Figure 1 (cartoon, one colour):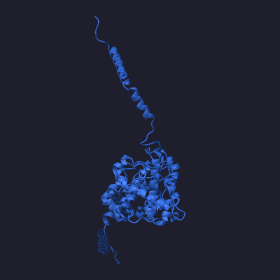
Figure 2: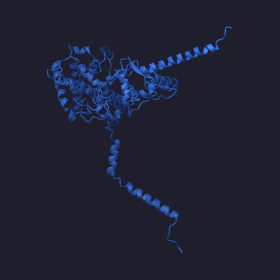
Figure 3: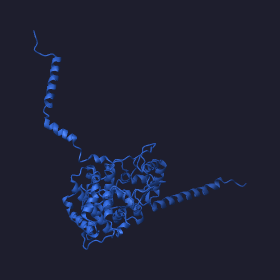
Figure 4: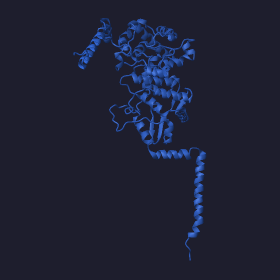
Length: 460
């Protein structure tokens, strides 16, 4: 009698056929319109993070979201927009009027200078300027050139006025309202708020009249003199960088702190053992490692010798916190850039775990606090070291990390430090130890004098 049930092989074969039919049905659901859209996206170059972002010529970036989530306010302009990333934002419109007002003053002061002169000078730089930005700029060419000319001329005029090469107008709010100038100092070095330095150089050369005292300055020294109102470095340091040709103003500031005394970052250097991050101030002190202020023209010049870390004094305020954060972001984004500020940020992040660590650095005159409470500085420093990537074996402080760790792992240093901390931490504990030692010596002498006559040889 024939059976109505199918064999196992027939059942599996039938299932495979059904699966193939099922997939075939799904394949035909992707119609030609959808395929055309996919092909269009395949053939469209990226705009939000353009191909130019991976080139060494690209130097102006949107700050990564991971950084913005931690220290967002340090990257966003508060009063003025420079460049295309924040162009025409509503909360920055106040300074837009002053940009054009300064441009009018410049045209009225420099003879034979006209708007067409400015546009014709900058026009050949337009394509190169676009390549400096990590994103596609949605501005047509004339609008883009207008932005470069207006922003660039405003920066140069402002720098000249602050340097007293050109007089401020009476009642100019930029000079008379005290809150505006500090905001400009911070906004003009933010990574997202830049135009290429070669555009500024072109405009500076074009607008420097033959008889102007402006010619005594280079654009680099004029720019650094502007920022020196908050950094306050000696003039001889400023003039060391008179011929510097940076990518933009942030890069100029950053480069002026990278001095020849810093160990170069050598990618070909081979370490026999991997470097390790160091411990916090509190733990280093327990191992007998101390910190003291060092002397250098740059706060990056950290040294370690015979159990002492020397750190040049640094003033923590709103400007420096913004500068540190934007320099770290710049180094993280720029292709092949050195990591001096990233390394320093990581080093300080290692040292500071709590408000007590900040308090110790302040007591040692290493850190001058105009930022907030010790806890607020500790939080900022810890946030600064988040989400950063760098090679600790190739950084300029690699040897310092190694030397500090080797010193910390030496048991003799730990024992001696513990002894000093326990018995010599205060004058009273020191006096107590000395008194106990003297008492012990006197007791021993008294015992010797008491016992000695019984063991003294007789003369008979």
